Amino acid sequence: MAGRTRISVILSLSKDLFACAAALLLGTTALAQDPPEAAPDSLAAEAAPRWPLPECAHPEKSVLVFPGSRAAQDLFYAKLDSLVSTGRGNVNVWHVGGSHVQAAFFPNRIMNLLDSLTVRGDRGFLFPYKLAGTNYDKTYTITATGEWEAPILTQSSTLRRPRYGVTGYGARTASPDASVSFRLNPRGDSLWCCESLRVLGYGSSQRAYPYIICLADTLRFDFEPETGSYLFYLPAPTDTVHLQFHIPQGEEFTLTGLQPVSYRPGVNYFSSGVNGAALPSWLDKCADLERDMKLVHPDLAILAVGINDSAVAAKDFKPDKFKDNYRRLMRMVLKTNPECAFIFITNNDSYRYVRRGMTWNTNGEAVRTAMMELAEEFGAGVYDVYGLMGEAHSVEAWRDAGLVKTDRLHFTDVGYELLGDMFVEAMMEDKWRR
Image (cartoon, rainbow, N blue to C red):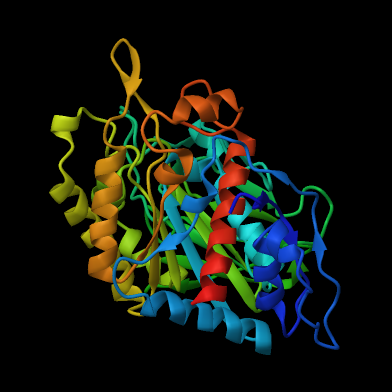
């Protein structure tokens, strides 16, 4: 395993796609072998420059582990195979967590690598995070006008809280001039488009609602009671939409998310991350999470919640309660799609905040053990970030390598991208070897 390298792979669609992907992702040893014969209609594979993994990483731990059944994961791979071979249908991935997910670098790296290995689908959920005064995904642009209130799910606030859903965010406005505009491709490329826009949210009454003006026409929505969302059909595919709101005096509208829909086949990647979120944040404070899960209908759920649940003294971390909360979340997902596969991502080795600064988080091993037990119970996989970092007190070496920030809790941009590379590599190796 010493010859494995960190890589970013961009592959074009072909009949031998996953065979090529697995060979490329195995690193220098695999690349030294003769590549598989390409299908006649395939395009050339292109790999980005490679460089050795940092010494602080333990690539032998960068594998998917299945303590119990792996049937659901193999079914997920079969769905990917079908998408690649037929060019039809969609495969949906839901990635949920705290700040590691909201930071966007980690989920976006996984999303882009999966898209390059299969077929690009939809962008997932958008939200104007600036309204909440928090960090945001810079791979798309989104702006708003008017006055808004957006209390953050995980922070105390004197503001009236909205009904949070799958994004974990909500913003409320009573401004008659309120609007939200987004552009999916701010760099001028054509990666993403949408033919419809789904608006997640609710008005104080039916008199408050969103609308879109396109040229001289006002586009009206189809309201879907089952998901509580407003669906707009756009006159042509676009990457830019300007959404306005009809809000009479005394009324208000609460926006909880935007979902651009393209109707094209591919992998749809949905990420839900809120800084500081623990399992109770999603389960007890997001009243519309289970309803919104119907919009995702995940075929794979990447479960990365745990770093905030464990940010307590060892005596205060209750593994049984942690597992019970995860059971609630997983059963909610399975209610939407009984065939959904799960992959747990263990906590990274880290420090946690205390009153006078930060102290080492002693619960990394306990969280990993709990996730292993849940994985055996539910037939899920585990990706052991705690192990690949080097386990206890390894975070200092990752900080010194420029992969973890000085807080010894969050990764740097490069660190998140490395984790994304290694995760997709592990998944492709698992698929190749099953």
